[in-house]
Amino acid sequence: MAGTVTTFAYIYRDPLLEPITEDWCWEMPCDRLYQDLGQRQQWQQLWDDCQTAQPQQLLLRTLEELGDTAIEVGDRLEKLEALGIEVIAAKQAYRTSANNTKAHLLKLLAVIAENQRCNRLRQGHARNRLNALPPPGKAPLQAYRRGKDRYLLDRSTAPVVKDFCDRFLLYGSLRGAVRYLEKRYGKKISASTGRRWLTSPVYRGDLLYQNQDILRNTHSAILSREEAAQIDRLLRRNGRLPARTASAPRSLAGLTLCAQCQSPMTITRARGRGQSKEYLYLRPARCPLQPHCRALSYEKILEATIDRICNDLPSAVAELNLPNLSTIKAGITSKIEQKEAVLSQLPSLQATGILDEDTALLRAYTLRVSLLNCRID
Image 1 (tube, one colour):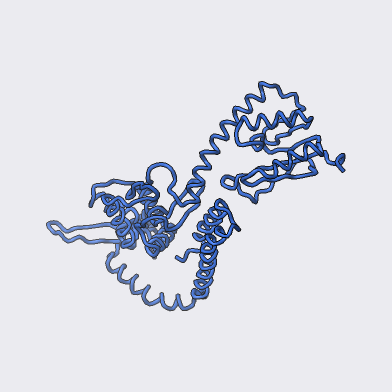
Image 2 (spheres, rainbow, N blue to C red):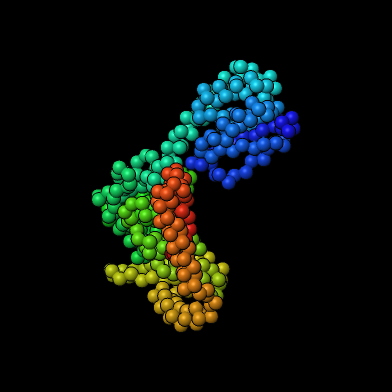
């Protein structure tokens, strides 16, 4: 039986850094596959089997999977090759029988040492995520400062951000809120910065990590869930309109066409000589007719538009075949309750020894991230 086993394969995965469900396809068939997840029990079994049922080849993805340090990798690689086992690292194009020189191996070990140093930093960041700690660096955007284990509201800047968001909620105009911020507080920001403020998970009480995972309710929020949902709806609505139309101070800007020439209409202002009252008109921008179509009173068109909407909207909504929102809400609520129930069971499972601390933290983190997809807007 021992003579038929010629090729072993070994995979080491760190659950903090690599998805445990990722498959790996070897370029050649292997007789035995050993896999470790976070710890190296299977490595010890592999080493024992290499001495009793000595294989001809050992397949690896990378050499650094042999150990946690470059010294450990080099020592284990030397012991395997001393047994006459050919070590093949698929991702690093390393093969014992390929006349790899000592200088090449030393260079490769230096690269491994640097990779493992980076992995230790990533592991530290991953453990912070599992414990719902903020990512490294200062607090992002405005309105927060970094505390010991969470973001804290900055009492001097948080009201400014809140006022900006309230202004957008009131009028639905991003550029209008940007202009308001500059006029009221003397703070000049771009429209793209304003959009980042409106959509930032941090302002909604959540943490956003570099891998784009989001944890909910980790610190004090500037925006409530209801306000955040309304902001998202307004931004989606504005996304279907030209940028200038969505932020224009006039309701009909960019939305009207001349019934005769089909030219888009622009809003013009006029003021009588010596008068303070201002008059607004809708005028065709590119009228091809001669004579040109006449300008129309903005106020009359706006009133007629509002009356038409009030008359047509109820019947249009009544004809829509909308889904049963109560059923959808009940289904989402049920999913949230199920996940929260599993979360509440994790401490008892850890206390009884069914789950170790690392596994419990990883499972809790996965559940908290998945809860974001079950939110009710």
